[in-house]
Image (spheres, rainbow, N blue to C red):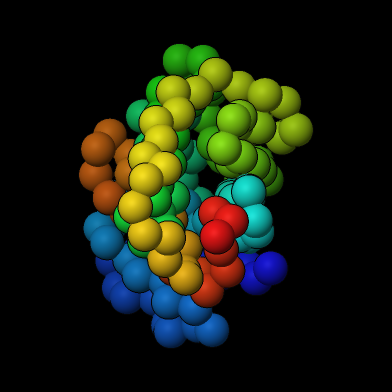
Length: 137
């Protein structure tokens, strides 16, 4: 497993061991991703909070993908110190299962890197690329 930084700002982030790319300037949280077989753990390290019901997470590996949306309760937020654990069947916020709409495309070619795209209110604000795989071959 590896942790890659998904810092959001107006400027491009430095190239790390894996590619981290900034997309827009809002919101500006600092989020890291830990990718492993069957789970992605997102850690909020600081900066702006994200309303959970406006937060969409897309995990892709080649043509295979999971989309996580409509997360948690309307008043819940993903904020500094929080951890989201995304699995094929559930979403955990700080070790507690939360509501989520999970869409899956499980047909197609599986790639050899995992791409995590983060959106708030439909606007892409981070893309994290990891060489570690979420889906089994």
